[in-house]
Image 1 (cartoon, one colour):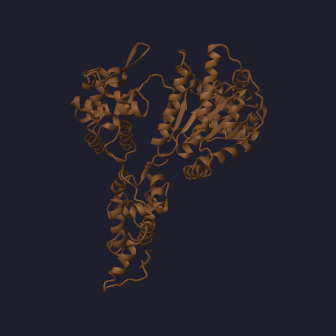
Image 2 (cartoon, one colour):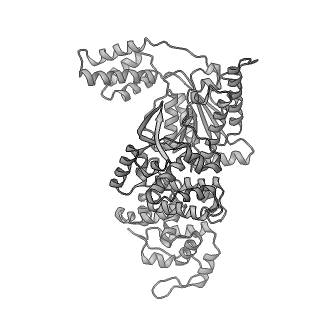
Length: 574
């Protein structure tokens, strides 16, 4: 049942129709802070259905709030509710419940939410639910200081600020916070506002229009902001509002007849001398001409890829009790709510803000998958480092690669709404013991790389997680810099039984218990057996042997793999 709203201002006059008309109230409202005004709007809007009665009763608050935030009165109400119900994750159900309206009607305010996202008072959260929104941390910080969150500056930018703005616009397009036309208009406004930039001058000289202008801009954005120069045709689909137009463009690209190819701006990506007609990149001449101000050295060698947490596949993980406890604790620390608070307090107390973790233990114990699941659950992008690619046969290139990696990570931290995870998977080759008295060039290079990594970890402002199988070879200097260290051990029989049933859904509890008891397998080994069993079932059906007997045979075959027992480093958390 909808409840009656009552005035909350102490000194008001009410006319015969029950409308608030007191000048004293208007004076009181003008003396409120932003948060106090928002609190009043939240209170008055409860169960209001956003009807005319509410809009009249809250007119003074909404006039002040919409004016200061540069939004409409309705958008001011929605923002206030999001701040109160969240602030980090709010969906349509929360809004409907607060306003006491139906699910269909609340959808009608979707355009107002889009406008709040474009105003950057809200951000879409695409980790678990594409329809949920949250209040960004910079907005929360401004409100705590009774400051109005400012719109991004677009005039008088240097080239680095310019491309930061470009990144913001394309992120909005990718997250459905802006339509293609809105994103294009924002880019055009950005270009018009910075005519003195050399990039802008050279871009205008190309005299491109419409979608071709956007395609080139998209290639440039990925090259500059994502260090990515290999784009498949499917990735261009967000730039089109009609499927027919996308299909026509894709056909032109594959045949090599696209206008951007004729102008030598993009080309088919080549690997080992073979052109791939479904993959494209900026030409070297386009990069050197358009990006001359950046002194940008792009490479087709990828040393790290930044992945969206929404693209990571959910997977249930099973751990021994102690390991599970530490993973849950770490997941709590890395949550968006806790991490920001911890980061701020560490900064206030003069401690390093970097958060470095080490997962160590034997192969197949779940170290790598745990990192991915932590990223997915905490909504953090993950930058997975290809350690072998860092090392180059050319003298001095390895050191440059490692420095470039951390430079790119710092840029990602600045651009992303939440700090990404920098993931060194199987990092044995780069965090092992340094070689004393190194004489050979390779040994000297290894030591130099480790010294660079140690220095970067010392100055880290973000999250780094490394995994290693050979923990006994860990250099003591690295050991000190890892704040959290979790040893992943082979699961006990109880956990192994759960893994068996998770991998083979129709396995009975008795069968899973039997396999867990007689085979001391890691999760990775169990997965190998489960995959062999699945392939056999597809090829041959039920098979000549009973299921349990067949699985036992596969387990015995898996046992033929050699086992290496690594020494413990003797610690868990620091």
